[in-house]
Amino acid sequence: MRIWAQKGGRVYGAAIIFSLVVWVWTAAAAVPPRAYVSNEKSNDVTVIDTETDTVIATVPVGERPRGIRLSPDGKKLYVALGEEDRIAVVDTATLRVAEKIPAGTDPETFDVSPDGKRLYVSNEDANTASVIDLETHRVVATVPVGIEPEGVTVSPDGKLVYVTGETSHTVSVIDANAVKVLATILVGSRPREAAFSPDGKKAFVTAEVGGTVSIIDVPTHTVVATITLEGGDSKPKGVVVTPDGKKALVTNGASNSEAVLDKQTQAVLATIPVGRRPWGIALTRDGKKAYVANGVSDDVSVIDTETHKVLTSIKAGKMPWGIAITR
Figure (cartoon, rainbow, N blue to C red):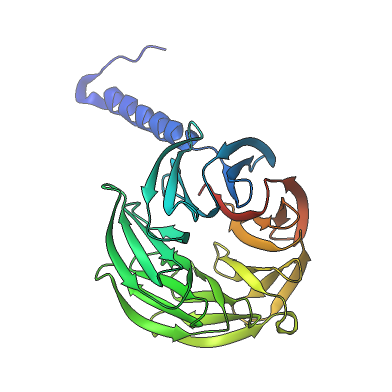
């Protein structure tokens, strides 16, 4: 089809708009819908097509991969290598490790700032959190936090960073701009991970030994509710909040299940059997499916978040730990 320029540039303007639409569609299509699963014992990442729920690749990354996150544009995958003191950077187009970034001692979990410019990494042995500049690949700050820091989560607006301290039973609240601890919040015994509601007003923190989930009012840095799961012996670890902010999904390592919590009533809406020793959990962008990494059964459970039913189970590597999904 031939398009001729007309007086006033009307057709020309339409052509520009058409080109922009094609460009945006092409850019979006360049990042396929995938789930990436870190396998701690096989030292690799399983790549799953989330439309077909099939494994499409296995990527060797390095020693003891655990924490795993995608860049905001989905073009880079970051994987914490605990035995190497580095973060592997995987190009999601080629599915190859492009480089490895020094990340402080024993990096286990981390998060990426919403603008994609920084990584916040927990250093378990040093009781610190490292801040990495992703342009220079240098550690630009080190912040003392709680004892045996584990989970790291950045708030939706990028202003706060939560770091759980397993032995101090605390959450350290870091001001991302000032790079200092604003508050320390006492939560349940051995807190593992935190997840913010989409509006950033509430945070959910799992406590593995306490068998609880603490709900934190983010503006006041206070615990406003504590939910006990299955008699307190479920060993909750992973947690995510649905895109509508109404439910929190929690993996229970000891009871081999996922609990669905109602944010408003704080009731357990459902308990879904999954594989053995579930750890990491992640949601698809639309929130319709949850993927759970089962560390002992070496598989991933795919759950329909509306019906609370397991749709399928996907074989992963040895001891799957964390999951990141294209957003």
